[in-house]
Image (tube, rainbow, N blue to C red):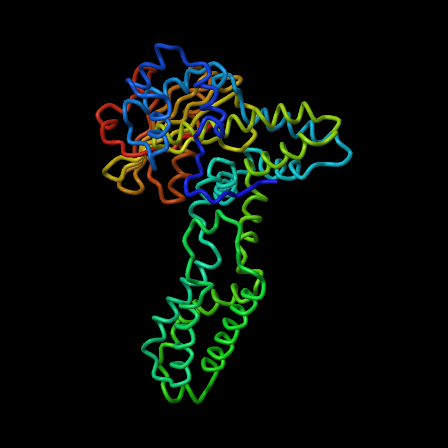
Length: 423
């Protein structure tokens, strides 16, 4: 079972919780350790790492180099391959584990890629679990936000009955149940008892019913046809309020349970704990593959933190691909640059650099080891231009480059932040 703690810091990169950092620190040499610490003890170094965000300090860069050069982490191999192997092992069982269903939904063929599915898969890749926990608004906080907005919206009402209801909303906002709604409340087990929740939901429903009566009242419309109660914003707020009108809707556990049920890392951790205490026939093999996947997720989290980027893998299966990385970087002038580096099984290395500027102008630089593949790509360029143009992007310049002409040059100095993905 996954326990959600009440710590304000989730400590996602401590050695005892981040397997990748633990692996690096176990194998660091005396010389590397001295360079990393610069006279400080390891506790001080870890405290620096736990800053809210990386500041590209020398220490971050030194540790990032150690992470990327660590033999164990370098030999993790393809995550997609590990996912396939784990899914194959799970399919051999007569009684499938819940993890099998998650993996089936998570790992898809590259031919089925779409903007919506890609976004969903990345959000559930296990990389963003801790961030989702920290930023998720609790039901109590959401209710408080909606009631606050509604109270402000109805302050200028001319209708006596609506004014009375607005006073009731003000009383709800000052109630005990909505006093403490800070974000750390999500990380702790709720202490609200059911009677309190039922009482709050009953009062919310009363407000909803009476406001709905006013909205549908021809008398009120004749008295003040342009009253704020009839505004579009009021209607939107009432719809939102309706979703929080039942006691169970105010439970933080309901929200976190839904989130954990689809996040890969959360499901991996839960499955690992359950299997460790079981007599499952394929227990050791499944645990080995889960450990490998968990290490890969922790590696990406650590790289994300140290490089001030978002490093992750693309959860798609592509038979022609051996391995690959994708890095997106934003420049200060709102231009974006993307490096795509692929190792194809048949054609070897393929490097593509995309630069987009002025919102829809695109430059493409391509480098390939295979002259045969270069010819195939060149023949496809007219079709590519047409497809890009159909979605509002103008391919202004497409070039095939030599291996030594794939740097950002002066633009590199202006890159502000990045995003790295692995396939």
